[in-house]
Image (cartoon, one colour):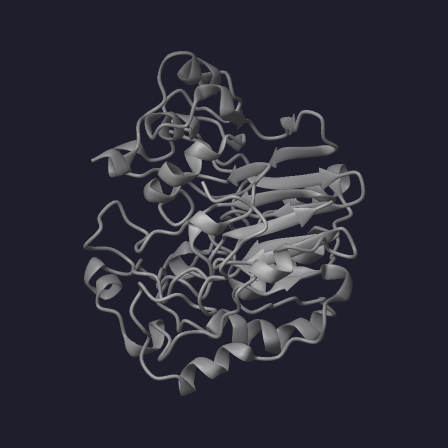
Length: 373
Protein backbone atom coordinates (compact mmCIF):
# COMPACT_ATOMS: atom_id res chain seq x y z
CA UNK A 1 0.00 0.00 0.00
CA UNK A 2 1.31 3.41 -0.94
CA UNK A 3 0.04 4.87 2.35
CA UNK A 4 2.70 2.87 4.22
CA UNK A 5 5.37 5.08 2.70
CA UNK A 6 8.93 4.12 1.83
CA UNK A 7 12.08 3.48 3.86
CA UNK A 8 15.02 5.88 3.38
CA UNK A 9 17.63 4.76 0.88
CA UNK A 10 20.56 6.11 -1.11
CA UNK A 11 21.92 9.52 -0.12
CA UNK A 12 19.01 10.04 2.28
CA UNK A 13 19.99 6.87 4.14
CA UNK A 14 23.65 7.89 4.22
CA UNK A 15 22.76 11.23 5.73
CA UNK A 16 20.69 9.81 8.55
CA UNK A 17 23.41 7.24 9.32
CA UNK A 18 25.73 10.19 10.00
CA UNK A 19 23.46 11.47 12.75
CA UNK A 20 24.60 11.06 16.34
CA UNK A 21 21.07 9.86 17.06
CA UNK A 22 21.54 6.81 14.80
CA UNK A 23 22.55 3.60 16.59
CA UNK A 24 23.53 1.69 13.47
CA UNK A 25 20.07 0.17 13.11
CA UNK A 26 17.61 2.87 14.18
CA UNK A 27 17.21 6.30 15.76
CA UNK A 28 17.14 6.64 19.54
CA UNK A 29 16.24 9.11 22.23
CA UNK A 30 19.39 10.54 23.78
CA UNK A 31 18.00 11.73 27.09
CA UNK A 32 17.42 9.24 29.92
CA UNK A 33 13.78 8.72 30.79
CA UNK A 34 12.87 10.76 33.86
CA UNK A 35 11.80 8.66 36.86
CA UNK A 36 8.09 8.20 37.39
CA UNK A 37 7.01 8.98 33.83
CA UNK A 38 6.09 5.42 32.96
CA UNK A 39 4.32 2.99 35.29
CA UNK A 40 6.08 -0.38 34.81
CA UNK A 41 3.19 -2.17 36.51
CA UNK A 42 0.60 -0.92 33.99
CA UNK A 43 0.51 -2.90 30.74
CA UNK A 44 -0.23 -1.09 27.48
CA UNK A 45 -3.83 -1.34 26.28
CA UNK A 46 -4.64 -4.44 24.30
CA UNK A 47 -5.73 -4.22 20.68
CA UNK A 48 -9.22 -5.24 21.77
CA UNK A 49 -9.36 -2.44 24.35
CA UNK A 50 -8.09 0.05 21.80
CA UNK A 51 -10.54 -0.92 19.08
CA UNK A 52 -13.60 -1.26 21.31
CA UNK A 53 -14.31 2.44 21.70
CA UNK A 54 -16.29 3.36 24.80
CA UNK A 55 -18.75 6.23 24.80
CA UNK A 56 -16.39 8.42 26.83
CA UNK A 57 -13.56 8.11 24.32
CA UNK A 58 -15.68 9.80 21.65
CA UNK A 59 -17.68 13.05 22.06
CA UNK A 60 -21.46 12.62 22.12
CA UNK A 61 -21.88 15.22 19.40
CA UNK A 62 -19.80 17.35 17.04
CA UNK A 63 -17.52 19.91 18.65
CA UNK A 64 -18.40 23.55 18.00
CA UNK A 65 -16.40 24.83 15.07
CA UNK A 66 -16.01 28.01 13.05
CA UNK A 67 -15.06 28.73 9.47
CA UNK A 68 -11.78 30.70 9.46
CA UNK A 69 -12.03 31.77 5.81
CA UNK A 70 -13.07 35.35 6.50
CA UNK A 71 -10.45 35.77 9.23
CA UNK A 72 -7.75 34.54 6.90
CA UNK A 73 -8.48 37.36 4.44
CA UNK A 74 -7.11 39.89 6.94
CA UNK A 75 -3.59 40.04 8.38
CA UNK A 76 -3.32 39.60 12.16
CA UNK A 77 -2.99 42.92 13.98
CA UNK A 78 -0.14 41.55 16.13
CA UNK A 79 1.60 39.81 13.23
CA UNK A 80 0.95 36.38 14.80
CA UNK A 81 -2.20 34.31 14.55
CA UNK A 82 -2.88 30.58 14.83
CA UNK A 83 -5.88 28.52 13.73
CA UNK A 84 -6.32 25.09 15.30
CA UNK A 85 -7.80 22.78 12.66
CA UNK A 86 -7.82 19.65 14.82
CA UNK A 87 -5.27 17.36 16.48
CA UNK A 88 -1.80 18.76 15.63
CA UNK A 89 -2.82 20.56 12.46
CA UNK A 90 -2.52 24.34 12.72
CA UNK A 91 -2.39 27.13 10.18
CA UNK A 92 0.04 29.75 11.48
CA UNK A 93 0.11 33.33 10.18
CA UNK A 94 3.45 34.80 11.19
CA UNK A 95 4.68 38.17 9.94
CA UNK A 96 3.11 37.84 6.50
CA UNK A 97 3.87 34.14 5.99
CA UNK A 98 1.61 31.09 6.30
CA UNK A 99 2.76 27.77 7.75
CA UNK A 100 0.86 24.49 8.10
CA UNK A 101 1.85 21.95 10.76
CA UNK A 102 1.35 18.15 10.65
CA UNK A 103 -1.49 18.37 8.11
CA UNK A 104 -4.09 15.60 8.44
CA UNK A 105 -7.39 15.86 6.55
CA UNK A 106 -7.90 12.10 6.18
CA UNK A 107 -10.83 10.19 7.60
CA UNK A 108 -8.67 7.90 9.74
CA UNK A 109 -5.27 7.97 11.45
CA UNK A 110 -4.46 4.71 9.72
CA UNK A 111 -3.02 3.27 6.49
CA UNK A 112 -6.49 1.86 5.75
CA UNK A 113 -9.62 3.66 4.60
CA UNK A 114 -11.95 1.21 6.36
CA UNK A 115 -10.23 0.60 9.71
CA UNK A 116 -8.36 2.53 12.34
CA UNK A 117 -9.10 5.56 14.54
CA UNK A 118 -11.75 7.67 12.80
CA UNK A 119 -11.83 11.44 13.26
CA UNK A 120 -14.66 12.79 15.37
CA UNK A 121 -15.74 15.29 12.70
CA UNK A 122 -14.40 16.97 9.56
CA UNK A 123 -11.69 19.61 9.52
CA UNK A 124 -13.42 23.03 9.68
CA UNK A 125 -12.40 23.81 6.08
CA UNK A 126 -11.76 21.55 3.09
CA UNK A 127 -8.13 21.20 2.16
CA UNK A 128 -8.72 22.59 -1.33
CA UNK A 129 -9.75 26.03 -0.01
CA UNK A 130 -6.68 26.67 2.11
CA UNK A 131 -4.97 29.96 1.27
CA UNK A 132 -1.53 29.88 -0.38
CA UNK A 133 1.09 28.34 1.93
CA UNK A 134 4.74 29.28 2.34
CA UNK A 135 5.85 26.19 4.27
CA UNK A 136 4.56 22.82 5.50
CA UNK A 137 6.09 21.41 8.69
CA UNK A 138 5.96 17.69 9.58
CA UNK A 139 7.32 16.58 12.94
CA UNK A 140 7.41 12.80 12.35
CA UNK A 141 5.85 10.01 10.33
CA UNK A 142 3.06 8.59 12.51
CA UNK A 143 -0.32 8.40 10.78
CA UNK A 144 -1.95 11.12 12.89
CA UNK A 145 0.80 13.54 11.80
CA UNK A 146 1.67 12.41 8.27
CA UNK A 147 -1.37 11.61 6.13
CA UNK A 148 -1.02 10.11 2.67
CA UNK A 149 -4.16 11.58 1.00
CA UNK A 150 -3.41 15.01 2.45
CA UNK A 151 0.16 15.04 1.13
CA UNK A 152 -1.07 13.89 -2.27
CA UNK A 153 -3.20 17.03 -2.45
CA UNK A 154 -0.63 19.42 -0.98
CA UNK A 155 2.20 18.26 -3.26
CA UNK A 156 0.92 20.36 -6.18
CA UNK A 157 1.13 23.66 -4.28
CA UNK A 158 4.87 24.11 -4.74
CA UNK A 159 5.95 25.15 -1.21
CA UNK A 160 8.81 23.51 0.74
CA UNK A 161 8.16 20.66 3.18
CA UNK A 162 10.39 20.77 6.28
CA UNK A 163 10.58 17.56 8.27
CA UNK A 164 12.83 15.23 10.27
CA UNK A 165 15.59 13.02 8.86
CA UNK A 166 14.29 10.17 6.72
CA UNK A 167 10.66 11.34 6.52
CA UNK A 168 11.37 12.78 3.09
CA UNK A 169 11.38 9.23 1.70
CA UNK A 170 7.62 9.04 2.30
CA UNK A 171 7.02 12.46 0.79
CA UNK A 172 9.03 11.74 -2.34
CA UNK A 173 7.27 8.37 -2.77
CA UNK A 174 3.95 10.26 -2.72
CA UNK A 175 4.94 12.73 -5.41
CA UNK A 176 6.54 15.66 -3.58
CA UNK A 177 9.51 16.83 -5.70
CA UNK A 178 12.85 16.14 -4.01
CA UNK A 179 13.91 19.78 -4.33
CA UNK A 180 10.93 20.80 -2.16
CA UNK A 181 11.88 18.47 0.72
CA UNK A 182 14.13 19.66 3.55
CA UNK A 183 15.11 17.09 6.19
CA UNK A 184 16.64 18.22 9.48
CA UNK A 185 18.58 16.58 12.28
CA UNK A 186 18.18 17.99 15.79
CA UNK A 187 19.54 21.54 16.05
CA UNK A 188 19.76 21.93 12.28
CA UNK A 189 17.90 24.88 10.74
CA UNK A 190 16.29 25.85 7.47
CA UNK A 191 15.75 29.45 6.39
CA UNK A 192 13.00 30.13 3.89
CA UNK A 193 14.53 31.88 0.85
CA UNK A 194 13.81 35.60 0.56
CA UNK A 195 12.07 35.62 3.95
CA UNK A 196 12.99 36.24 7.55
CA UNK A 197 11.80 32.85 8.73
CA UNK A 198 13.88 30.01 10.16
CA UNK A 199 12.74 26.57 11.32
CA UNK A 200 14.96 24.59 13.70
CA UNK A 201 14.46 20.91 14.52
CA UNK A 202 14.84 20.44 18.26
CA UNK A 203 14.79 17.40 20.59
CA UNK A 204 11.69 15.47 21.56
CA UNK A 205 11.27 12.12 23.28
CA UNK A 206 9.20 9.86 21.09
CA UNK A 207 9.53 7.22 18.35
CA UNK A 208 8.56 6.76 14.69
CA UNK A 209 7.42 4.21 12.14
CA UNK A 210 4.46 3.39 9.88
CA UNK A 211 4.88 -0.41 10.05
CA UNK A 212 6.20 -2.73 12.80
CA UNK A 213 9.31 -3.34 10.75
CA UNK A 214 10.10 0.36 10.23
CA UNK A 215 10.08 1.47 13.87
CA UNK A 216 12.54 4.34 14.44
CA UNK A 217 13.87 4.23 10.87
CA UNK A 218 13.08 7.97 10.62
CA UNK A 219 13.63 10.77 13.13
CA UNK A 220 11.07 12.65 15.24
CA UNK A 221 11.47 16.29 16.26
CA UNK A 222 9.94 19.26 17.95
CA UNK A 223 10.23 22.49 15.95
CA UNK A 224 11.15 26.09 16.72
CA UNK A 225 9.80 28.68 14.28
CA UNK A 226 11.47 32.10 14.30
CA UNK A 227 10.54 35.17 12.29
CA UNK A 228 11.80 38.73 12.56
CA UNK A 229 9.33 39.48 15.38
CA UNK A 230 8.11 36.18 16.82
CA UNK A 231 9.37 32.82 18.06
CA UNK A 232 7.14 29.74 18.42
CA UNK A 233 7.59 26.23 19.79
CA UNK A 234 5.74 23.23 18.32
CA UNK A 235 6.17 19.98 20.24
CA UNK A 236 5.10 17.35 17.74
CA UNK A 237 4.77 14.23 19.92
CA UNK A 238 6.92 13.87 23.00
CA UNK A 239 7.28 12.76 26.58
CA UNK A 240 8.59 15.05 29.30
CA UNK A 241 12.31 15.71 29.01
CA UNK A 242 14.64 18.26 30.56
CA UNK A 243 15.96 18.89 27.04
CA UNK A 244 13.21 21.51 26.98
CA UNK A 245 15.40 23.62 29.23
CA UNK A 246 18.18 23.53 26.62
CA UNK A 247 15.62 24.49 23.95
CA UNK A 248 14.58 27.49 26.04
CA UNK A 249 18.19 28.55 26.59
CA UNK A 250 19.13 28.25 22.91
CA UNK A 251 15.90 29.37 21.24
CA UNK A 252 13.57 31.09 23.72
CA UNK A 253 11.67 33.02 24.91
CA UNK A 254 8.54 31.99 23.03
CA UNK A 255 5.56 34.04 21.93
CA UNK A 256 3.51 30.84 21.62
CA UNK A 257 4.07 27.29 22.88
CA UNK A 258 2.10 24.44 21.27
CA UNK A 259 2.30 21.22 23.31
CA UNK A 260 0.59 17.86 22.90
CA UNK A 261 -1.83 16.96 25.70
CA UNK A 262 -3.89 14.00 24.43
CA UNK A 263 -3.40 10.25 23.86
CA UNK A 264 -1.63 9.71 27.18
CA UNK A 265 -1.52 6.50 29.22
CA UNK A 266 0.51 5.34 32.26
CA UNK A 267 2.34 2.83 30.05
CA UNK A 268 3.24 5.58 27.55
CA UNK A 269 4.29 8.24 30.04
CA UNK A 270 7.77 8.50 28.58
CA UNK A 271 6.49 9.08 25.02
CA UNK A 272 3.48 11.38 25.51
CA UNK A 273 3.03 14.37 27.79
CA UNK A 274 -0.59 14.47 28.83
CA UNK A 275 -1.93 17.67 30.41
CA UNK A 276 -0.03 17.57 33.71
CA UNK A 277 3.38 16.98 32.15
CA UNK A 278 2.59 19.51 29.42
CA UNK A 279 2.39 22.17 32.13
CA UNK A 280 5.78 21.01 33.47
CA UNK A 281 7.20 21.17 29.96
CA UNK A 282 5.80 24.68 29.59
CA UNK A 283 7.72 25.74 32.71
CA UNK A 284 10.95 24.23 31.36
CA UNK A 285 10.40 26.14 28.12
CA UNK A 286 10.08 29.40 30.04
CA UNK A 287 6.31 29.85 29.77
CA UNK A 288 4.46 31.95 27.24
CA UNK A 289 0.95 31.59 25.81
CA UNK A 290 0.16 27.86 25.71
CA UNK A 291 -2.04 26.29 23.03
CA UNK A 292 -2.78 22.57 23.66
CA UNK A 293 -2.72 20.31 20.61
CA UNK A 294 -3.09 16.56 19.86
CA UNK A 295 -6.57 16.20 21.34
CA UNK A 296 -10.24 16.45 20.37
CA UNK A 297 -9.90 14.70 17.00
CA UNK A 298 -9.03 10.98 17.29
CA UNK A 299 -9.51 8.39 20.06
CA UNK A 300 -5.84 7.46 20.35
CA UNK A 301 -5.73 6.95 24.13
CA UNK A 302 -7.93 5.17 26.67
CA UNK A 303 -8.95 8.32 28.51
CA UNK A 304 -12.15 10.31 28.02
CA UNK A 305 -11.97 12.46 24.90
CA UNK A 306 -12.34 15.71 26.92
CA UNK A 307 -10.12 14.76 29.87
CA UNK A 308 -7.10 16.73 28.56
CA UNK A 309 -9.17 19.91 28.26
CA UNK A 310 -10.89 19.52 31.63
CA UNK A 311 -7.61 18.76 33.41
CA UNK A 312 -5.91 21.81 31.89
CA UNK A 313 -8.85 24.02 32.80
CA UNK A 314 -8.43 22.92 36.41
CA UNK A 315 -4.62 22.94 36.70
CA UNK A 316 -3.53 25.87 34.50
CA UNK A 317 -4.55 28.62 36.99
CA UNK A 318 -2.48 26.96 39.73
CA UNK A 319 0.65 27.11 37.57
CA UNK A 320 -0.12 30.61 36.26
CA UNK A 321 -0.11 29.20 32.73
CA UNK A 322 -1.51 31.51 30.05
CA UNK A 323 -3.83 28.97 28.45
CA UNK A 324 -5.21 29.41 24.91
CA UNK A 325 -7.95 27.00 23.81
CA UNK A 326 -9.64 28.37 20.68
CA UNK A 327 -12.49 26.52 19.06
CA UNK A 328 -11.85 24.44 15.98
CA UNK A 329 -11.35 26.86 13.11
CA UNK A 330 -11.11 29.92 15.36
CA UNK A 331 -8.27 32.21 14.29
CA UNK A 332 -6.69 33.44 17.53
CA UNK A 333 -3.86 35.85 18.30
CA UNK A 334 -1.73 35.03 21.36
CA UNK A 335 -1.31 38.75 22.03
CA UNK A 336 -5.07 39.05 22.48
CA UNK A 337 -5.86 35.71 24.13
CA UNK A 338 -8.94 35.82 26.30
CA UNK A 339 -10.07 33.78 29.27
CA UNK A 340 -10.73 30.16 28.33
CA UNK A 341 -14.35 29.07 28.29
CA UNK A 342 -15.17 25.31 28.22
CA UNK A 343 -16.69 25.44 24.75
CA UNK A 344 -16.10 21.70 24.25
CA UNK A 345 -18.94 20.95 26.69
CA UNK A 346 -21.38 22.11 24.03
CA UNK A 347 -20.78 18.82 22.24
CA UNK A 348 -22.89 17.05 24.86
CA UNK A 349 -25.99 18.95 23.74
CA UNK A 350 -25.59 18.39 20.00
CA UNK A 351 -26.60 14.76 19.60
CA UNK A 352 -24.60 12.21 17.62
CA UNK A 353 -21.85 13.40 15.27
CA UNK A 354 -22.98 14.25 11.75
CA UNK A 355 -21.64 12.45 8.71
CA UNK A 356 -18.01 13.12 7.89
CA UNK A 357 -18.88 14.54 4.50
CA UNK A 358 -20.68 17.56 5.96
CA UNK A 359 -18.87 20.87 6.23
CA UNK A 360 -18.45 22.21 9.74
CA UNK A 361 -18.64 25.98 9.90
CA UNK A 362 -21.20 26.48 7.12
CA UNK A 363 -21.03 26.46 3.36
CA UNK A 364 -18.19 27.91 1.35
CA UNK A 365 -18.42 31.50 0.18
CA UNK A 366 -19.04 32.00 -3.53
CA UNK A 367 -15.64 33.59 -4.01
CA UNK A 368 -12.32 33.33 -2.20
CA UNK A 369 -9.49 35.87 -2.05
CA UNK A 370 -7.03 33.23 -3.24
CA UNK A 371 -7.14 30.79 -6.20
CA UNK A 372 -8.03 27.15 -5.63
CA UNK A 373 -5.50 24.52 -6.74
